[in-house]
Image (tube, rainbow, N blue to C red; front, side, top):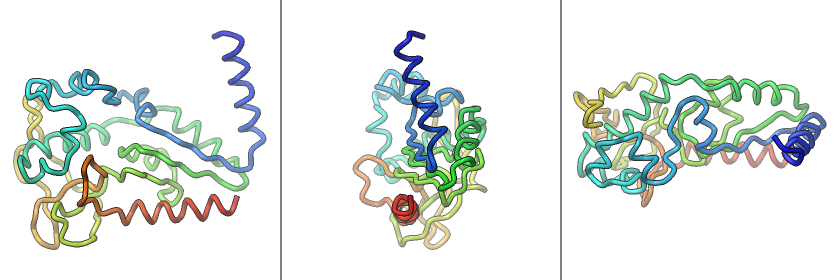
Length: 212
């Protein structure tokens, strides 16, 4: 570690130590130390999902709501595997450190994250202090959608063939209309995402920002 890096870290530590409020911004890199893939570029994505390399499907192409209509087993194979992986992976100690800093702030802290794994909440951050701008894999919605319902995925466990990354067995369905369910996450070209949960989080975030 060179002197410039050391000085930068020391200034950051002083700023945090003297702060009254803390805004934590986190993206895909936050989960790498937990062992989660970050999907950087096609190669990074295909290293995590080899069968999709064989099909020539990139992350941008796979993260498209159209698959839930065109090939539900492939769609839920991808998202079901991610849901299972995020559940089975423990958040690394960095989350605990951030939680400790947040608890020492007189005006509290808020998390703004593009991650959909729910690891901040699993690390003790209140759902009321987290803004997940891309939604959460831990919540589901109708793939149509038939309405604005969003429900917890805590009882959902999708069986996935590790060789093909295709889902097998019964897939999650909307409790209101029976149509195939999908994760409540914002995908590419997504005109069917139900944003109400994230919008409520954003409203709380704006209120917190105005108060500090």
